Amino acid sequence: MSQAPETKISVRNLTKSYGGTIVLERVNIDVPAGAFCTIVGASGCGKSTFLRMLLSQEHPSGGEILLDGEVLPREPTPDRGIVFQKYSVFPHLTVEDNLILADEFAGGGLTSRYFGGARQKAHERVTETLEKIGLAAARKRYPAQLSGGMQQRLAIAQALLKKPDVLLLDEPFGALDPGIRLDMHELLLDLWRERSMTIFMVTHDIHEAFKLGTRLLVFDKTRHDPHAPERYGATITYDLPLTDDARKNVPEADALITQPTYQDIGANHA
Amino acid sequence: MRLINLSPGRVLGLGLAAAPFVVTVIAYAVASHYRRLENPADKLLPSIEQMGATFWRMAFVPDRRTGDLILWVDTLDSLWRLGFGMAVATAFALMTGILIGFIPHVRAALAPYISAISLIPPITILPILFIMVGLGEASKVMLVALGTAPVMTRATAQAVMEIPGELVIKAQTLGANTWQMMTRLVLPQVLPKLITALRLGLVPGWIFLISAEAIASTSGLGYRIFLVRRFLAMDVILPYVIWITLLAYLIDRLLLLLSKRAFRWAHLQGGSL
Image (cartoon, rainbow over all chains, first blue to last red; front, side):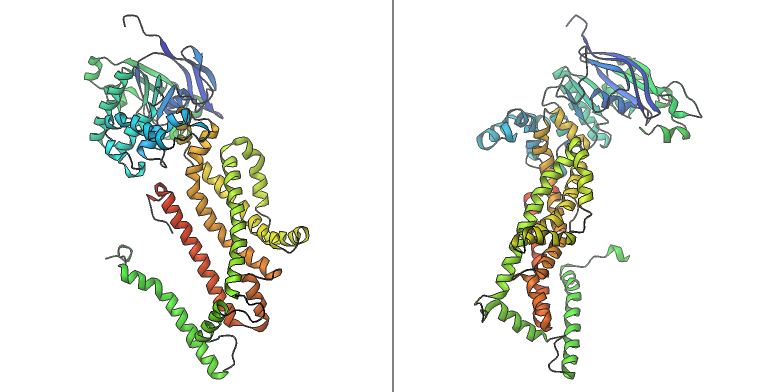
């Protein structure tokens, strides 16, 4: 691949406000296919809002987001996969049933359900995936019977079922133990290299952001009115390519992000 | 050790659970004994043996006039009315509740209506039902259904709306359309909550059943206790009340068991009463 990869996601002058509170403003960015963008920022800076707009869970108040040069659809579609921090897998389905669900939606007819032989075959088809995410032995268990790390591995595998071009991750490892996190990083990087997806990952761990990404986006406020904190929103203040050099000395989070003052916290909860 | 950190063992637990019942029975037996010492023909607190004998007669001795085993005929008639009414209410609550909870247009159209309907005291509809559909079975079944359906519908719609938004988004990214989300996500997630709503709905359900039977009926548990009230037949009324309570308890436990068997995933965390 000698030629430059095409632009996958293009954000043009994006604004998001709730009532009178401006959360994001003047967000502009072009992301080429295959990039792994990690997104950091103070809590309440709108980074999750940005991710939800990429997913079409929320809609821009101004500006636009283009996917392959076209305006995003108004609702979530299979070309953008998502892993949330919680509630990512279906609690009423066993591990293997969680993994055949997308298949059943596509080919299960009116009931969206496979029966008998078709069901058995669908279960056989996911065996390889189950082994890859280390859940082969737990295939008949329900999510509530899995550890947090196992649940997120299942969530990632499930998000990739429709082979999305774009994978969105909203603090996916925020609730996991450090050791488990490292395993999850390996799994995610493997899958990213294998599938050549474009990934956007929100995290509050700056080391994780530097380790995983090819590009770091920092969301922060550039303007601030102490009497009306809701007047100005956050934007992308740093857009750093993450080379091996950059990974060697990870800055302190405070160097990149201005921590919110006490007055801000109430106004910026969105 | 602090009191909150001590739990009774199995035997002690069962003993503690039985104690209030035993105390009630003993207190009744003592009161009944002393009343009958003063007046052997006392009707208000009949002896436990007398109640047992009456109950036995109603259950196993054919009635002299009709030849029926009165207890079983009453029980069957009442359970049929209750079951039919609750089945209608449950089916309505499931369908309407899912539509209201999941489809914003249906919610806009029906949620305020169902909320308003659910505030009508159901007993006030009873005379309307008697006038419109007559004094037969239909009016009693309809009272049970109409009395419980609105509240069960609201509970079901609420349960649908409490499904985490993340799951609904996730299903869409897996390619599901609205119908598929209703059948594969919403329905299975809501069924355990529907059973809870049904168990709670059975409490007013019994009230409406007994009321309807008391006012206009020729059979049923409610009919019987209001019939024999005229003769101060406490030896019939008290066993019937206990019998109704026992039936209600058994139905409740069976529904809980059904929920645990059929929706194991929903009972993996936390206890349930």
